[in-house]
Length: 436
Image (cartoon, rainbow, N blue to C red):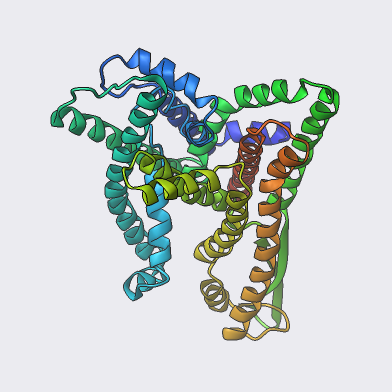
């Protein structure tokens, strides 16, 4: 970012307020991640969890994306996962249920109702996930450390704990929506960005230290550095890449017909980093279920639980294959939710705009859809490939297993930073345009 642009940001009151609000929410979010759930002996449980998370891929991943809330056993222990799950389900239902599909086509008013239904559905999802998470952590604490932090707990204690966790998740949902409304960027992405930034330096340092020990330490260390640099550069490239469709606007002058030329930008990665977040949230559910079912008394249930834990471990090929497919699927799906060719074509026609050589109306819609599909497939493949690069490196060169976690986190961080920068840049251009 240029010095001139930084000065313009501080000179723009609206941008100052939006950026300041994001930092304010970051402080609140960090504070909430350290507010403990009301239980007996929280310090002993925290020490146990911090030691356990170092060798647990599933809980380690959840802890990183929740801002360390699991290691602190805080009220935000389930994070934004219920809201993300509810969003995925509601968005899928909009493609199936006629009423929701009609709402999605009603513009801003319809989207507000869909958001309202998403919030309502988040509540039962949060309750179920809170109960499951408490059972999972209790089960882990008992089996590995002989620590039953809920021994002798009555129904009122359970209600208090679950209610506190659900309230923490709903507060995060509210903060995310406030960022989208009063800050910059997608609120969910920004909050996850804060979570990762808080824990990533320690994770990367640990991976680097472990990886460089041994005979090939120098080579491995150099490989990690080069990979991080190339990953950052590639994410910036695919995030900023776009194709400009030429648009002409016909304006009637007093005598002659004048034509104003412009363009419609279609980004290579219209969906941003949301497909990665959705894919990770969805893939965490089988592993979560497997951990809960592993103490079942029925043999086939235990076998199923073991299969889920093995195959949905972040270092398993089956998990990463599904991860690859889901990123592509969500990229395609989410792109057509936020970018609607039919509405764009309709707006162009109302403003006397047209694509040169293409008839207004259905032909324009088909033209934009075709370009959007091609770009989305390329962008989705690129995003999925770069997300799986750390996994292939860890398998090929026998590097630290947590490298996959670090690589995914790096992709999200870079993508959110670039997206936020682009939105700031767009607001600066709009502000400068409004002066004239």
